[in-house]
Amino acid sequence: MTVTPDGAPRTQELAQRLRLVRDRIEAARAHSHRPDPVHLVVVTKYFPVQDVAILAGLGVTDVGENKVQEATTKFLHLPRPAVRRHFVGQVQTNKARQVAAWADVVQSVDRPKLVTALDRAAQAADRRLEVLIQVNVDQAAGASPSTGRGGADPAAIGDLAALIADAEALELRGVMAVAPLGADPRAAFDRLARVAGAVRANHPAATWISAGMSGDLEEAIAAGATHLRVGTAILGSRPSHR
Ligand SMILES: *Cc1c(COP(=O)(O)O)cnc(C)c1O
Image 1 (cartoon, protein in one colour):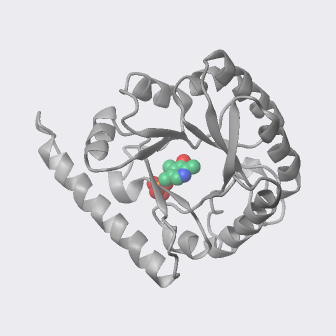
Image 2 (tube, protein in one colour; image 1 turned 135 degrees about the vertical axis):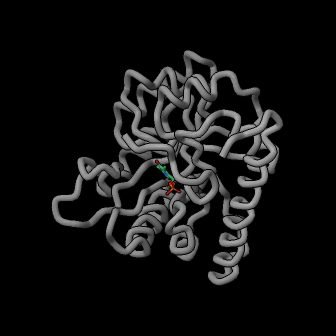
């Protein structure tokens, strides 16, 4: 679809899909008897910054990206505080400075070295970052970050949480996970909820549970997700996968 200079067709398209997703969220909340709000982070990876601006105009408050280079190009010049910027992808420690320059929330913290690098980078930039620990909830035999979904081993979460809590420029907000491909997402989200409870026992402010994407947001809400990360259902199919 071509976008006219005023962007109207794209605006209508995004508005319509956003409404459908919000309806799904409300229905799932009602079904799960969840009186608390469920926050929507719209994942805009592969889509232009113009879409971010349109989404902000439609009332979207939070957007997410998963590639450092793309996100840095897209967000560095976006007027603040139009939307809250989340990073949800893998971060190499040598890219921590780039992420700390614009991210408000880093959802994908999964190892001590990254905690140290982000803390140092945020301090140097005179910024504070809210962070989530990405948890590997894949219980399949031999599952590891090499399966591509990433995340820290549940056994390592306690130490990681303590390290983040002690970091000067980081605030521990909770946990995040991506459901394993081809497995029951509900079981994975229940595992995440248990990890979240354990973290919260020591860090009462770590209340966020980021789970649920376009295909499994209902299961995530049923399992207690406070934040959803939705891309395709709002933006449409991504132009291409690497
Ligand atoms: C791309 C992405 C999403 C959004 O996935 P959709 O299936 O397009 O909704 C959510 N979380 C992470 C970590 C992602 O990389």
